[in-house]
Length: 361
Ligand code: NDP
Image (tube, rainbow, N blue to C red; front, side):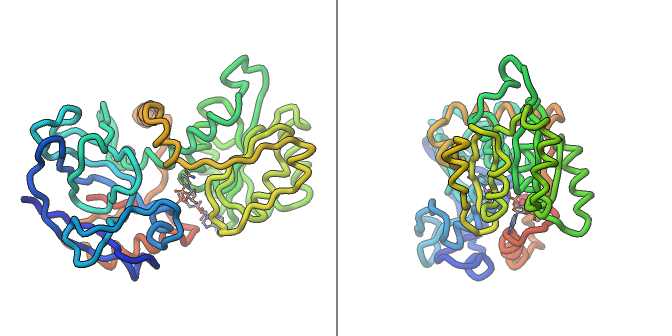
């Protein structure tokens, strides 16, 4: 028997009030079950929304882990090492690294037991860190699919012209990944960040990742900005064919107005907590298509493509052509207090952070 510690919640609300550490024991695996030791698990904005109760997919609450009230383990993403396998296990073996196939499995815990069918094996972990593998399947996969799937880019065809994407939330995990894929695939990117003391350093950091242009939200809102954009895009001869919307509100409206006719605008987040308002003329006269992307749904529907996407990104990481996002690591060890773990989760939606919170085990 082995002991696991898990960050669990039983009712919805603020993470600092609702999360607590629960210790339970795991019996040796039988049949097709496997015992995992978590290596790294990020704290994504959606994980917090899930605890707050505002996220559409919620893991079921249960008492299987021996909690006194029905509970769920927090966290949706992460990488684990296989410690032991049941006798009928065919797809993974001891020492393999695996990631979760779906969301809601509860990754904020030291150990877990699942069925082998619930995990995706990392075929070659050589040259990769647990941090890279543990954060590949949500942010980078989302950016990869959104940049690739909505526009028939010239870069993948005759490459007869330069083309652009524009995005807000460019400093987010998704935003930083989108910058890198655009660069890799020969698409120019116009990136919007929020102003802050020292934002110029952030601008250069994103330019180093491959951003073509980086501007602040207040510049985006200026009336004269469209003239600047016209200059950059050679009066539209280099069309802005894709908009990625992480933020919503006025920012999204301003972003949409810069799109070229027939462009796509894909919404994947609402960090401002404001609705996305769309000028009617963009729909009627400019034929802009507005849609949304949800990586959970995409992954469930495209299991094979998901595996290929993950492997493609991990290869880029291994080659050094995809840089890690800045993170704030929090090690779960004997000295770590429950309060520190809860505060790390609570701080996730604050903004202007040094990096995404990641639990390391
Ligand atoms: P990160 O935790 O990496 O970063 C959060 C980002 O949000 C930061 O860049 C921050 O900007 C920005 N932000 C915070 N508050 C505000 C605000 N009030 N106005 C504008 N921007 C704000 O985020 P992720 O990349 O993990 O996720 C970003 C968003 O994308 C979230 O809403 C998340 O739920 C969503 N998402 C959606 C997916 C999908 O499939 N639909 C998949 C993955 C993520 P700053 O740098 O200025 O602090």
